[in-house]
Length: 122
Image 1 (tube, rainbow, N blue to C red):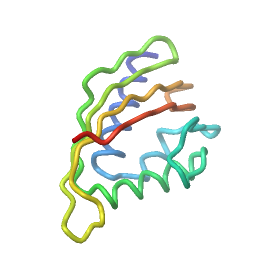
Image 2 (cartoon, rainbow, N blue to C red):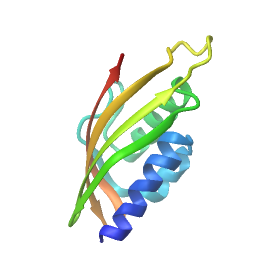
Image 3 (cartoon, rainbow, N blue to C red):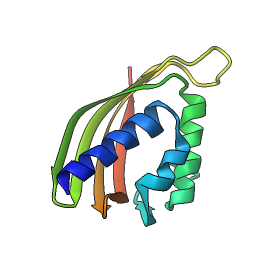
Image 4 (cartoon, rainbow, N blue to C red):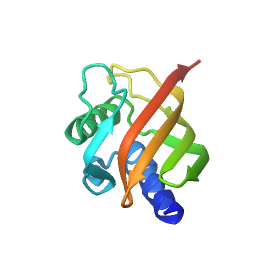
């Protein structure tokens, strides 16, 4: 599964979080997907993940995401990443940089669970 997991996670970060292709989550997340620590105001299922990704794409336009480390062992994966963005003056969100870590469980080539944390950097 590591080759399939790597392709799934690369698409997850590039298509969804960098390019804002929220619809890609329909193919990347399993039917029983669970986010174990969603952002406040969002649920833990796949529909909520799509809503959260759309929200992030709106408040962090033009985001660039770099994955520094991606470690896969069996059906588990861990990633360390940095996201940067330049928000227009009217976006209501400042330009910035966020660093984070995600931990995944994958089943049959799809993300079934995620645990994540991130922090805005100065």
